Amino acid sequence: MTTPSSIEHFGEPLRASRFGFRMTRDMYGFPNRSPHQRFRREFLGEDLWAGTAWAYRDALHGEHSDLYLLVQRDDALRNYDLSMRYFESLDGDGFEDALAYVLAKVKSLKPVDRLADVAGADGAYVMVFHDYKQMYIGQSSDIRKRIRSHWSGRKSFDRLVYGDVYRSILPVDEFRALDNTRIYAARSRNRFSLEERAERAARPQYCLNRIGGGELSPFMQMLAVGSPRGRDHGTVPEASREQRDQAVVEVRSIIGQHHAQGRLLVEALTQLDMRIFQTRRVDGSSRLWSRRDLINSAARRGELSVQLFAAFLTAMGETIVWPDR
Image (cartoon, rainbow, N blue to C red):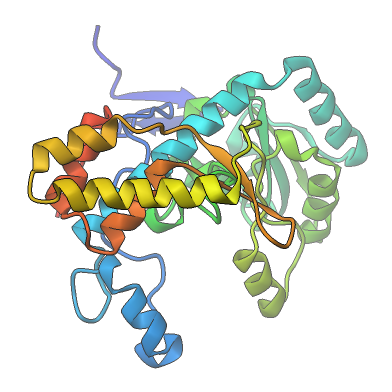
């Protein structure tokens, strides 16, 4: 059975691409060496510049290193898996009720059958992803153009995980066109206010928005980006601080003992308990962690070579993917 080279969705022609018309794990987190944003050395300071050098393969920090591509994709795929299990746990009727509440709060939001009807329209929109029981609320000076950019765009590789890997919300730009099953839109000269009202009415468990809606000053935008929203993807067992410390010693001991024996090292690491645990900090807050995080950290410190870390990921069932360049 052949895949059509183009189809129509909401009246729009969709051209086939390597990423397909629906989001899949195989094509999620496709690596890219280009940073989302480049910072000058004097802006970051010497300590932070040196501390992030592992993530780049050039002295100017202009291209991500092989190790960064492996670590980031591993984090992104683990977040993807957590998100999929989370979506499956949600109640379909609860989602429909949550969507109806948003539409009741912003009555000007109406169903869109053809994107051409909102071409050049200034206003707010709601994208519905029925199979995932999620919605996304946005605003634009051209709703049709913005929604098409969601369908065809990809989230910057280094922004796939936004904040903590265990709480990061899956980015809307990784969903594909056919994942978007319904669209609602409202024309408005004050699109930011409309977006904010709709976004505030949305229940967080059903909403993909990573930051709040509304027009933000540059300072507030910086604060929002620095402190994104997150979600709890499910309950995990408790572990004491002592147990976490023991896990750190365990991982370092295995690496130290088998460092010169690649195959034995990979086998020993893959046999570890990779469950996610929750540990309370001294201040009462909690952190989620797993031994996989500790292994990733060892790779960042240079205790595991790129080849050994790639072999570990392969042994864990992952397929190593490299960018086109």
